[in-house]
Length: 92
View 1 (cartoon, rainbow, N blue to C red):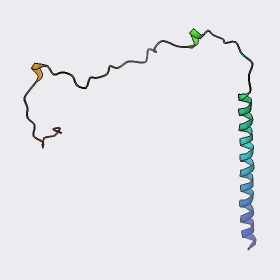
View 2 (cartoon, rainbow, N blue to C red; view 1 turned 90 degrees about the horizontal axis):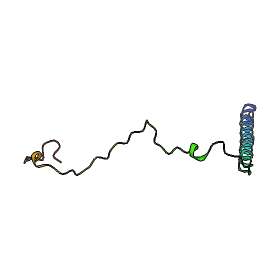
View 3 (spheres, one colour; view 1 turned 180 degrees about the vertical axis):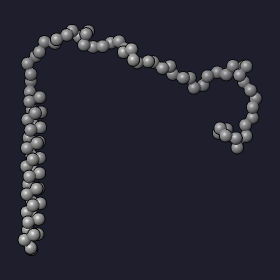
């Protein structure tokens, strides 16, 4: 092996070791943060009553759209006896 090959392999080995140690440190920090969050906390008195914190009304920006009926009955004045050929557009 040439000295250049050994230098390249050494570089890749050092980069891999650095990536592994950084990853281990990161996941240890995440585990510590999760352990702190899951620890029981002191009970805190709520700042507002439940009726103020829960919104039961509908915001003004929300509009309710009605559901369209699929099979509406046809009135007698709107009925026409038209025959469509199968080659016409929209027949099928």
